[in-house]
Amino acid sequence: MATGFGLVGCGMISNFHAQAIEKIRGAKLVGCFDMVPASADRFAEKHGCTPYHDLDEMLANDDIHVINICTPSGAHMEPGVKAANAGKHVLVEKPLEITLKRCDAIINACKKNKVKLGTIMPSRFGAVNIALKEAVDSKRFGKLTIGDSYVKWWRTQEYYDSGGWRGTWKLDGGGAYMNQAIHNVDLLYWFMGDVKEVVALTDTLAHKRIEVEDAGVAALRFANGALGTIEATTCAYPGFLKKTEIHGTEGSAIVEQDDLLHWEFEKKDRKDNGIRKKFSQKAGGTGGASDPSAISFAGHQAQFTDFISVLNTNKKPLVDGEEGRKSVEIILAIYQSSWTGKKVTLPLKRDPKIPEALKLGK
Image (tube, rainbow, N blue to C red; front, side, top):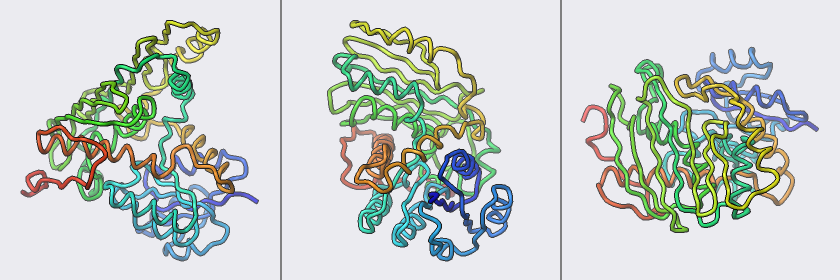
């Protein structure tokens, strides 16, 4: 029997979900729901599924086993919890939610109802990142010393003006870090381990009519003692490919988008030349550096395939709810440090409070 999917939220990213599901043998897009009925109707006609104008009605369909949450970031919790309570497995677009409290509500609902929960982080499924993770786990870097990530993208003013939720704390939950750089935040701690301390600066430098940051720099200390940085911006014209650098006492690797720029280790391995050749071919594409729609659905496809594979087992998806929560916590620590001017220690005891001065109209 095919694994049936239902999508909640029919905006831009939902099209990538639909394309990914279509490519997976044994998966079927059954239905979709949107708060705007016409959006659900258009999406259903385009992707060949049933439109629903009532979420409860879609959740009552026994042919739907997985609910994909594609609503604005700060509106993930309500449909996510409702889907879990209906006994559906839940896949949530990044970020899992925009506060730890709301993340925990989804996680706890899925645990209570014994359903699987996954957070969409397709960069983890890129072949070059998998090779890098295997090198980290094999201790090829020796003692990890420095881990850096750079997301220097460009977004026009029209991008923020095009949706009423974009650039707001209530529904976007943040700017360049929470919306754009979160994939690299996830990758960096996946490679380097948990973050222990954060010192950061953020600002709104180039865009108008938004509450959130469009530029930021953060210095990190990881739990293993290594140091790192995360730079994020949406005001670096014309937009550059994202980059991750991992360094240690016995090796270094640098990945730009899906391309390997550097791969060198003190202790050689017979696979190294093949890895360099395979991932240094300039795969092309901008990865959304200047256009949020200019991405591939391949990562989503790989992640959905992983998720389906564990639905009827005791195993966890590669990126479950707890994993998705970590990147949100790191970003909230970055915000808290920026707002207070102080070093922030993780784990956070509570969600940081957004200063009133950062809200529009104040």
